Length: 480
Image (cartoon, rainbow, N blue to C red):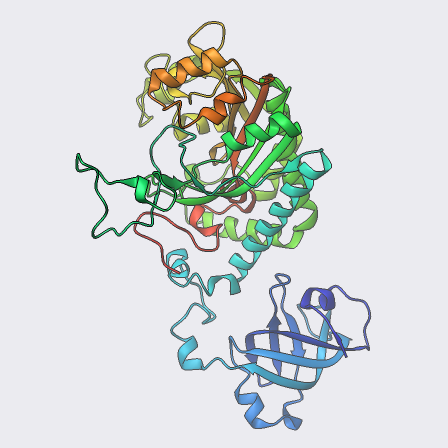
């Protein structure tokens, strides 16, 4: 007998044929109607049981959460809510789920809070919301690879364990094989990392950018897409300690080309999900509309989810210099009336999420790219402009999110890069290999980093970043 996925049967017009389908019971009513789901789509397949000719012991085991295998004939449904149903001929119980146990879990068919769902993250993917989010996450991931492959990029796997801090922020997780209760010490009482596994102090990576740059200066166009880690004690709905980063790097590309790439890339992957995740998008949009009914008008999204995505697809990103953005913010009503948590008083201020969202949602009404930031608030590897005080940096700002991607034209001049590293105290001996690339055929090159979870957050309409990754890692939370 042909084994099919639920989605294949729901979308099939091949009725009056026999099929087999495996899945988990979402509901069983009237001892007759099984709602079966296997994760392949949002909808359940209705399986109709002839209970009078089915063993009572089997019927007792068809409970919410149980895994079963059903064989039967696909027929046009006479009932409402589905176009086809499976007329059951045989049922095999593959894995039982005892009702008393199910009552203690989120598998119990009732509304649960997202906090409760996070406590049972191993089961939450069986709910409609998380099934939809994770299917979309998977499709977005595929679209990322497809875009870069179609545009001549090479996929590079950069190290997870590294001795360098790409951001210079110092918020890194240490990696060690030393006995923490009795670590070896140097003569001056410091921990002797020369006796550690790698013979030096190492950390989990915060970015694959520096290594990706070296590969761009040999392969031309590369990208990384992997896990990154920040030991930043930020317990917010926008931060994770472990997240996935997309980082393209392109040789012979200036800042304008970099902005073009970011815009084209983001629009491509969002268009991909509008074409391949229609039912999940519709479900998540309706979920969001229902959720927002309880919120004050001012806290609701300015537009429904699919309209918001469509808005990004149809509008060119507005390009604004940092200097112009600061003038707009300084003269804005929220700033003058001291409604911002961080008041903008002078040029050089680091923009916060509230400022970024004001520019996108209130002032321009479209995605915004801010470029040419003050050198003092940006990383050492960004190219210094001729004015000596700004760098060729850019941030892409989105409605509801704020910064979704950040990048720059990289500093390709050896002497300028070395000077900047010395100025902020970065050990040139640690990054000798990075400096080397500026000695052997240096050239203009650019790239950006995009936090994948923030992209998923925008595309799904979810409000907490912990709900768009299977097992979130955040301060005081490493469960599962």
